[in-house]
Length: 176
Image (cartoon, rainbow, N blue to C red; front, side, top):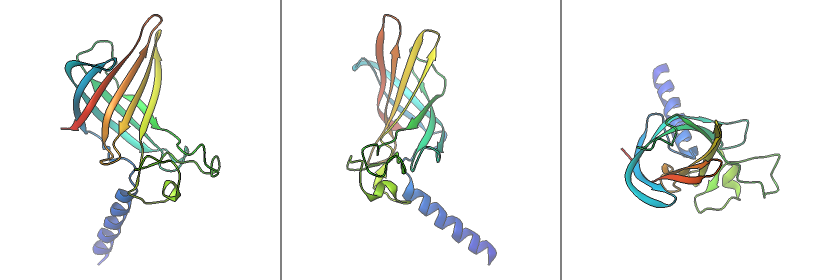
């Protein structure tokens, strides 16, 4: 009897958590895509691995952090886990700054009660971003999520050096 109750509670918690998910990224997922250099195809494949995801309750509702690794044949892109966070989307609403949310409605809007709901399948985290500096090079990186699948569709690494600036994208990501 206790075991059945425990299983029922866990099943209900799992169902609730899946409804509230603003992304479907999980540890160990690997995606394959096409590499772009400054928006032009290179003909090379690239791989994105999800190393970690975790809620950021202190930042706001539906906010998350993630670590991902981009693997390419390029030597100028770091093959270390890149740390990104979902962005606050409700700066323009009366609820801000008392109530912050990182959710976007699946129709692309950033207002309405769904942004603050405990569970809704109509919201997602649209974009994650992060940055770091290594020697004299600054890296800004982005992970874009699909509204339909709530899975990654694109990464961008923006590289800024003293006399050079460029983007390396991994697009059309498909889960392997």
